[in-house]
Image 1 (spheres, rainbow, N blue to C red):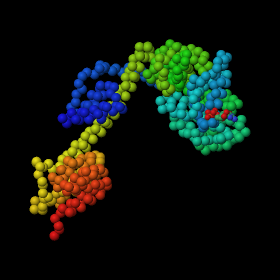
Image 2: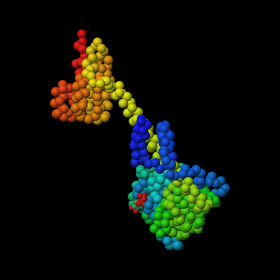
Image 3: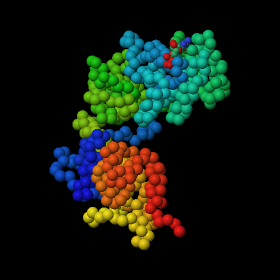
Image 4: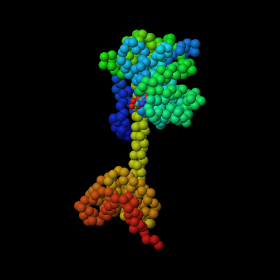
Length: 502
Ligand code: GDP
């Protein structure tokens, strides 16, 4: 019986909770096992338990230095709000995007390439601000090689300038400063440089080694100089990529295009991306149908450090996802199945934890209830058959006070019983003949009359009829709504029943 009760309550507490959905029969089995109870699931789980084989894709071990070929740096633009990050990116994207002769309109695809007349290139991530930077970093895609810190010459170093510096430092990414808005009448380059030194950016003009290029993003002044400075910085960093073998890339942006379907922009990190490649990213797969740049020009090959928009995704990958090339569509499907199963397992683990917590909570409540019942059992004096107990005199042991307690709610009843428990001394025995939640009833009166007890009503109404009957039966009903006052009353009652002191 106890077990049936337990199971029923467990069911109500745990399994009917809308937040705990059992999606896996194994979760239920484990939950029962961990509860230590002897319970059995009757019936068969509908899904067959499948043996899982690890089928996942991983990046290759890092290439050796000899395999590296020079590659463009990948640059993120950061800085204080309104200092000109967006304007700078727009200017760069529109003035110097690769193959201008194609005459296409540049679009925001998440990353673009800027090529100098010399042929040297820089890849810019096209989402300004540190939110994007930290989002990518949080997902493990540390693809930024250099941060361009935009500082407006008319405003100088501000709060988010410092925040950007902190983030770049944390990721160990070198900084190059673009002192912007030099066309503004209020521009003060010298002051801005001084402020930068004060926050630890040692600019070249003041004897340091950080390049600071004065520009006007609005007037498109010195943009080539900025790009050249980035290329110089990249040479110092000796950036190199391995253009051979299976492709590894990072998703910087993804979207659903009304005509081209699911597309995403990546920056290639290893290998050379080509049409027809089979790719996986998270739980998404693609057979590359087309590769395009920010002007929608088709690209035949995308080597490391270069961005490209990929068409041909069956599902939409997420920014920050790692893209890996695999041999076949069959393998890609298997990998995705494996990853989906992993996800499901993780979800099940979370469910299991929630259920375990519920079970523990339930166990605690169950134990507390048992304890309470035991304690109340100690109170209750069960007379055999109706009898009128006389108030005990000192010859037969301590006198006793029969009491009946009625309270408004469980909580207050428990509290009262708790306190009464402590007054159960050897001088006068408290005899709890009856207790309960609810108003005083005829039955309470009869009990009180039989035991010559006192009814304590806590926070409950006593009907006029009951009051009249009580008077007739000479049963005292004491109404209280403050626990300590009720207890004081009990004490007085006890004192009144004690034999006078000699
Ligand atoms: P973001 O918040 O850093 O992306 O800043 P925006 O690019 O949106 O620029 C903020 C404001 O500064 C806009 O009104 C721009 O037109 C202006 N601005 C940006 N660059 C320059 C510049 O080189 N010179 C001047 N005078 N204004 C600029």
